[in-house]
Length: 233
Image 1 (cartoon, rainbow, N blue to C red):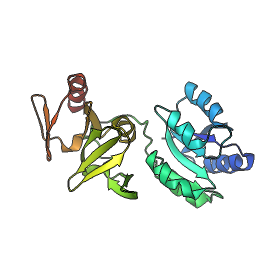
Image 2 (image 1 turned 180 degrees about the horizontal axis):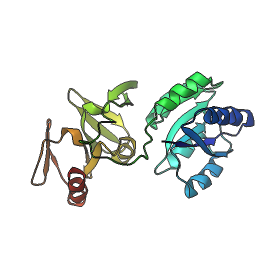
Image 3 (image 1 turned 90 degrees about the vertical axis):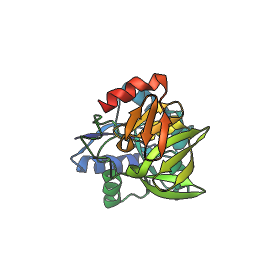
Image 4 (image 1 turned 90 degrees about the horizontal axis):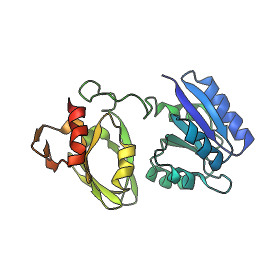
């Protein structure tokens, strides 16, 4: 599968390096290059891409501020000369963080973290375990922790935070549930209530208006029931 890429970078030398690296990998395709966040906004309005290489030091509107304006951002690999902002990048669910000057081998490792784009076709969880070994990084108590998606039972909204319930812990992490709905793969997670997302792999049964998992029962909201039933059929 070809991964379509967008470069958002205001420096011509850095644009050329990234374009050359993209051209050297047969599974990548350069869809466009933008010199500012505003050019990128216009580009993304008309086209959908799989992966954006995003510089942070952009004119007028910085990379992270631009990323926060996107309701459904593509997968993002940050490219910057400022490694001290990596923690903020994890909060925004970026795929990886490349510090300039970027070597080709480090570029390849970053892209390999994506190999299955988030925009790929949705498959029922029992028919594909492609995402079951995937991991994400979450910020907990000022630390960045690695978390396997297969270990997550469900996610519960807590205002501007969520509680991620795993088989062994409860993690209180920043970000509203809508952001986590975008971040977690749709192949594996489904919204069942205004306050809950559940890992389809851990549903044991549906009892009336309740989803039963290994951690107990979760409510099914009326507006989400049909979507849930379609995913389980």
